[in-house]
Amino acid sequence: MSSSRERILDSFESALIRDGERAATMDAVAAAAAVSKGGLLYHFPSKEALVAGLADRLRHLADLDRDAMRADPEGAARYYVRTSIFEDSALDRALVSMARLAQQGHPTAKASLAEIQDRWLDALEAELGNRTTALAVKLLGDGLYYDAAFFASAGSARTAAGEIGALLDVVDLVVRAGH
Image 1 (cartoon, one colour):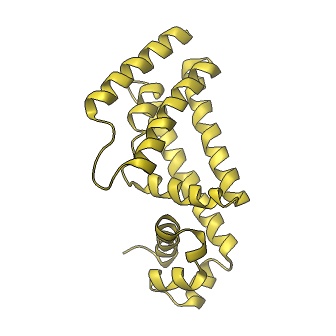
Image 2: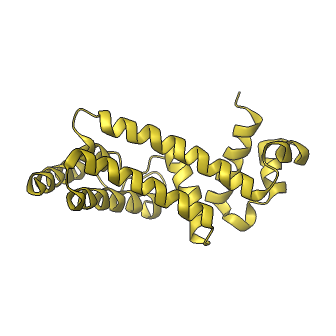
């Protein structure tokens, strides 16, 4: 069983994804997490503290992803594009919930997302040796993710496995051209 703190963050994340920031009230989050309001306030004394907790979670998950990207035997560029498919993973949920906050102009969310994007770009550049090539790869992956996260109908993949293979061939061309 997950800790109360993690259940609270899960509930906040779910409320943001499903209903947006206005519906993600402290009372609604406490009820969804099956904790008292006092229990919620013990872990997160304000909504801003909830956002900071979610930002920490996202940063941790993105760091794990960046480490996996660096270690991938096919290389960081192919990893980044290959994994840029929304799968409703913990990282996906953290990204989408933070994006919902950023859409409302929340400064912590905007800063958190910008920091993570910079870290991924830096990791790509470190492998590829060229910022412009790294940016091209990153934008290709980001476009795939955006398409899958925001336009796929429930339960259907927008980009087929064969298309991903063809896109990885394009990634290889971009990487070779950047060297």
